[in-house]
Amino acid sequence: MSAKNGSIKLVAGNSNPALAKAIAGELELPLTKAVVRRFADMEIFVEIQENVRGSDVFILQSTSYPANDHLMELLIITDALRRASARRITAVVPYFGYARQDRKSGSRTPISAKLVANLITHAGAHRVMTVDLHALQIQGFFDIPTDNLFASPVMVRDIRERFDLSNVMVVSPDVGGVVRARGLAKRINTPLAIIDKRRERAGESEVMNVIGDVAGYTCILVDDIVDSGGTLVNAADALLANGAKEVYAYISHGVLSGGAAARITTSRLKELVITDSILPTEAVCNAKNIRTLSIATLIAEAIGRTASEESVSSLFD
Ligand code: R5P
Image (cartoon, rainbow, N blue to C red; front, top):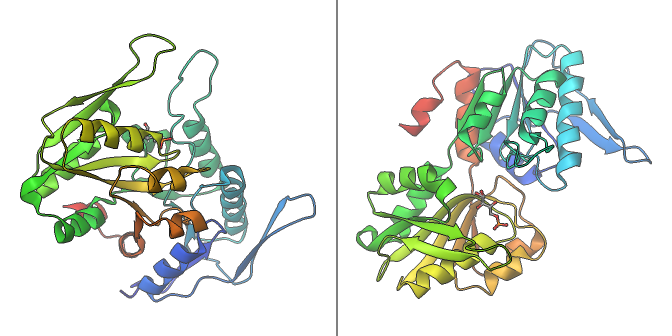
């Protein structure tokens, strides 16, 4: 894929150099020379080492672990580009951190997703591009154009290649994820089941009720985030207890904090498939039942279309 617009510049933060390189490769563009380094007190310093005046600049940066450092890098890179007279700045944030705090979960709690949207906008971004936002309404937290790309075409291709779809059931691991799971089930024309997590009484452990007859099916759990892995591991156990033949999971963002990779490896999940929206840790790379699909081509295509003012949504028709 070659970029049609010669004025495109790609600037990578430090969150996911491998994905940035792959996107640049797809677009047949070099990454713009820039340094993002630290002062002794860990303040971030950015220097864009090429002329970007009048350019259409895409910053590639997931706000993944360490979320605060990567977010601050994104903001400071944006500021540097704005002051360097870039014509248009698009923050490409494959994994948008803080998205799980998208409403007041209790009295006197923040809506951090909205705060982060404000910060990105005020830093000087003109557009945002992200992948599988935790909640679709976060798009509305931005008052600048925001493209929420979907990893599902990449997942669907992989699922079609690997499974006999006549025996597959897509499963949402919680009620909140039903729309996402239903969308994928529709694309591959399979039935859908839902897990309803409930704590009957305070202090009692969660009960996983499976809605749908999963007996004999190969179940594919679909979700946006795997963090501790607890949701998936418990869901896999519940599905197998209800007669599922085997359980796989396709999850957009492999946050996989702490000992999550080990938890997945020792679980009854046959395989966890994630995307490279977040740079996999060594533990994730070494985990025998975790596989990564790349979304570099998808993001590169969306960047190319944005630059040449073509439709991005038609990527998902
Ligand atoms: C929750 O709403 C999300 O969609 C995920 O289900 C959740 O973040 C997974 O977290 P964990 O892997 O820690 O159970």
